[in-house]
Image (cartoon, rainbow, N blue to C red; front, side, top):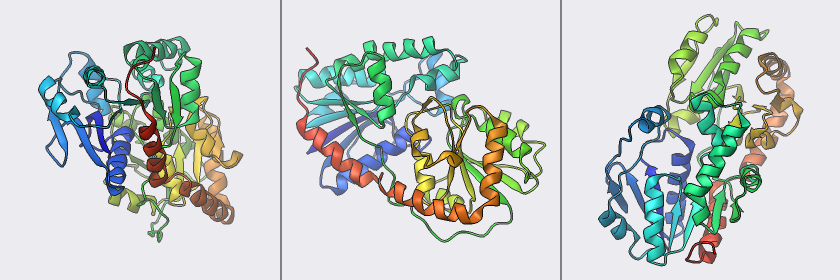
Amino acid sequence: MIIGLVIDTYDALNNGTTASARRFVENLRKEGHTVRVLTAGAPGKDKFILPKWNIPIVSHFADPQGITFAKIDAKVIREFLTGLDVVHFYLPFPLARAVEKMAREMQIPCLAAFHVQAENITYNIGLGKVSLAAKFFYRFLYHYFYKRFNDIHCPTEFIAGELRDNGYKANLHVISNGVDAAFTPGEMIPHENIRVLMIGRLSPEKRQDLIIAAAKKSKYADKIQLVFAGQGPLLEKYKKLSRDLPREPIFGFYSTEELLKIIRSTDIYVHASDAEIEAIACMEAFACGLVPIIANAKKSATVHFALDERSLFKPGDADDLAQKIDYWIEHPEEKALMSKRFIDQGNQYRVKESVKKIEEVYKNLKPGRPQ
């Protein structure tokens, strides 16, 4: 098949959606498919490049989150679409809307992916706890983009349920974004401290502040070193919050190879997010053998990866998180047993298996919008 993937940001590995898109492209090509990418960024194999679009006000909020927008160029878009068997849209931005319209005119089947949880928006504009605001954005995204599709790719059953609850009528295909083959158990790298890791954007809904507070409350506060792998607008705030920790936290953004080294020098993984569509980062960590502690949040799909209550903490509760961290520090034998179970779970979500499932979806797509 000749597959087209539309995503505004493809080069910078600064968010889970871009990372997932690149893994799908790589693995689809391994299966013998030709995959074209329409994006803003640097030239490359089968890439159709558009200039970056700086949208007043919108880009001001989007840039710190690692989100860029591509300008619409009909000539480039038509060249990209010519000869395609299917188009897969990753984000509901103006580029995707323009491409979808042209693809329909050319009778090319289309699939939309749902990667932008409404709470990703509401938390970043100060309305994270306002459920009506989330409902508004789900309905806005539906009317702006998703009502045009018969088929939507959902990374988890959780987000499929959110879409059903908000009136989405399309066929919802639940397929994990998948864990890359690189994330496997390896030899542990020696370190002096008790390392507690979280991978993810430094943004309000991810709640890294809870991990900082919990580290201060832990019985082992003098031994804990926090590691935050990610970028985002709250970096300076979190550095200030961490000033009185006995051991200075590590903040950084890492390549896959560097991240693997960090995971293999870590004792405990924490995923504190209040809102999450899937959390590939958490999946990567436990696929390598880290035992996670996950916020038991209503708007997070990540809770379904917990194998028992010891890997869950009350959302927003730093005291409960501190107790769970202390428990795993004090029970290394139990942690070793659970590590094996989490490795087995990680193997169920390999990207290679997800690609097989998405191939079947592609084969059955039909041109045309919902009637």
